[in-house]
Amino acid sequence: MKRLVAISNLSALLILIGFTSCKKEQFVGPDVESIYGNLVITETLSHDKPNGVDFSLGEQVNFAGKFNISADIKLEINGLTSNAAYVTNTTSSDLAADGINWDGSSQATFFKSEFCEIILTFAASEDTLRDTVFVLNTKDFSSEGYLLNNFETDLGFSAVGNTNTSVSERQSFPIAAAEGQFYYTIAGDEQGGNYWLGAIRFVGLRDSIGGIFSNDEIYFNAFYYGQDLPGTRSIIRLIEDEDGDGNEDERWEFSFYPTDPIWSKNSFKFSDATVAGAESDGVLNPSNIMQIDITLSTDGSTSTSSPSHGYSIDFPIITYGAPL
Ligand SMILES: [Ca+2]
Ligand SMILES: [Ca+2]
Ligand SMILES: [Ca+2]
Image (cartoon, rainbow, N blue to C red; front, side, top):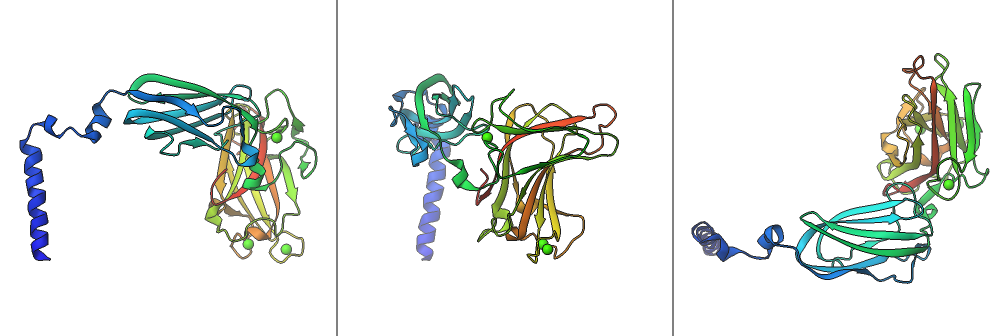
């Protein structure tokens, strides 16, 4: 064994001497070419769904394309009707061999049944490869977890507010929904210390959420569209009924400030929720959650300069194992 180690050390030494003493070009191999070589596209971009892709059947678009070197690439898919986008960065010399595909996911709004442009660009080259694909049917994201609502109908939720609530309604205008045709808009005016301006409420949830997953594997996800109103806060309240008597025992919350006037997908881990108000057993047990409130709130910091607050929301969904 000692002798093997000695030989191995000797080999390493010889290799090291070889590298330091020989001229660089004698050691130009594939790895060095990948970094410094000129990109040659040996097979242009294509995919296996020329007649359209049906994501509702679990299909995916499998890409093909070959390059002489392993290249850093950006693959971008844009929905021509929805403006939905999917962007991924990867390294590949053979897209098919590396299994580069698209399963219908998106970063912000969902894709619709529509034509999509596919754009492939390279980090170290000006080359741009293009293709198109038609989405026959979109992916059913409701099967990704427990969908609280998609706001396509008035069913499955209630809206609560007070005199400071100015808007609380399903809308399909003036912006396009993140999913389907409708989203929900809630707005209100802060009048000196009234920090709660309304909420969208989901009840009857006990024994609906949780299962085998721990709290750091459970996510609340939703698309938000801000109205450029500073101080606008969305507090997501998870209300537990620990003993099943129908009454609240403990509430948990996380919050953020949705102000950007663009749809963005936001995800929060249940393990990041903090207890709010009176503590009961101090443990967030997802199966005990009887009610979720998505509030429109403020932090009281902007009451004099800009009392208006509001946002639109679509497709709040609880997912397991990964964010939406
Ligand atoms: Ca919707
Ligand atoms: Ca209770
Ligand atoms: Ca509890």
